[in-house]
Image (cartoon, rainbow, N blue to C red; front, side):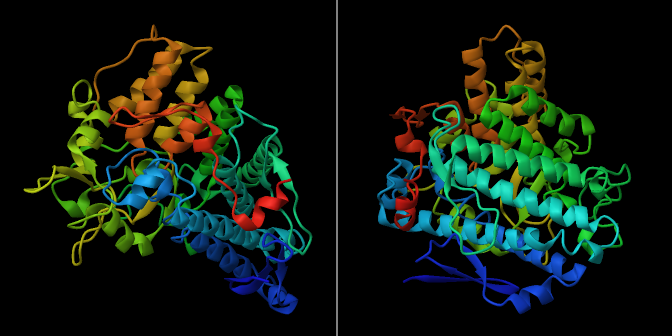
Length: 487
């Protein structure tokens, strides 16, 4: 019998002989003590964010690792990385990593469920809007994690909504949670997100006109001004607009264009998130340079502990992940509209080698060495303003192609591309343009794989090799210990 010991401030024991999704507090007394006060709830929620942002999930595996490799962004000599890029899910190291992702995802879902199990019973301990914020964020975290698990381990909604995908775990205890279909999981995700949005509406400080998104050292930004530390830096948490953006993403995955567009437009039309200006993105002073379009983030994971990993992956003298010049030139359309693309010009450092081909090193996650400061903290981007424009473009194309093209052109304009497309573009060509823009915008962020899966698009490497769209490449195998529970 294997046992997994998870800790979130209070200790949670998981036992795989009953199935390790079953969560049971080891000590009801410690749990009662934790949730006797508002500060206890805050500590528990903060602990969950730390867990989600760890290297096993969004501070590593789910942002900078195998999903990014499968987007065909790099060229490798390492045979394991080559196998991952070829969608070889039998590779032992990959099998192990998949199990780690699954285990830690449900660990953090369990930690969030600990909060949700008792938050309504302890409503009297909260001051001001903190009950709504804590419950709203916890619901959103649960939905966010389940959605990414679904995008990995389930078929796409478009292909097979009746496929038994995974358990949507909402309880704490020893009772096994049965597997739900893709459609059922989607419905539960949407329900959690809509409840979260309703709780945060009118309560989240980010909604106030006085809350101005900006850099920490900016005179304009007010994100650090709240007297409550817990209510500062709302974009480092699943705030109201992040939940709205996630709903736009989820509805798009479901093919519900009306609700997807409505949520994307709500974020866009709030004007809360300013486009990054060229002077910040290209600032000669590296201490004042915005490397990730920071002000455009609806939400990101705060990942200072990932710095050494990111340096090793992308930017040291011999990083694990590099791309050939032909590869980057192709991705960013250097021969056509890409010559002025800000991302192409700033995110990549050309490194010439005497005994091998020249390579591009990704600079998106470079952190200045002490004593130099950084304009923004190290973040793993989770939801961007640019994605809302891409979602709005796709969701509106069939009913209003002119509006769709406007959304698309607006994004490209703010990336330095002055060549616009027209509303006479065919749907097939428009989807191809969207595919290319996803790959450029989310390079090093692992969203490209999910876009291909959602649209059932074949994956084409820079060299022209084609991996036909199918569940064989898009559906991750369950960990061995879980496979019998899907039946």
